[in-house]
Length: 159
Image (cartoon, rainbow, N blue to C red):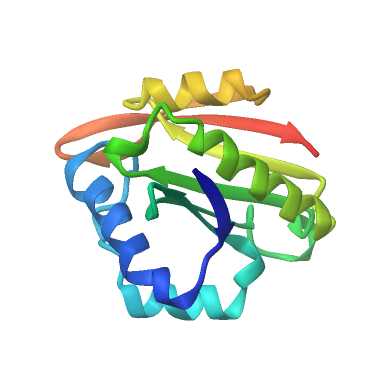
């Protein structure tokens, strides 16, 4: 079990994990699947912001971070994404990926880290509370997917 920086060659696997979550769950509000070529370009442009978790020699999850909102005033506030394949949950890989994101964001000069968690993802909410994030707000019915209105739980941690 390990976490390492992502490589462009990981893009297809990252897209596979992400797209399964997009298609099959309400954990993300998007319905637009990720393109491996576009992800490879993002990894190439900012390799220090992408991480992969491996278990038994296989990449089974990923994390990335990016500026929370556009504009120079937000340059020290980051938002992140973590997704694990179903078989990789409960192994500590989410915590390991988040640790890599926190260290990389801190090294880059980030002051705050934000995570948005779907109201339909109680496991993600519990994870954030276990790893020291504070829930700041619940944005009611801010997302819509599969004919359902979904709340967004916004979590925060100072670095």
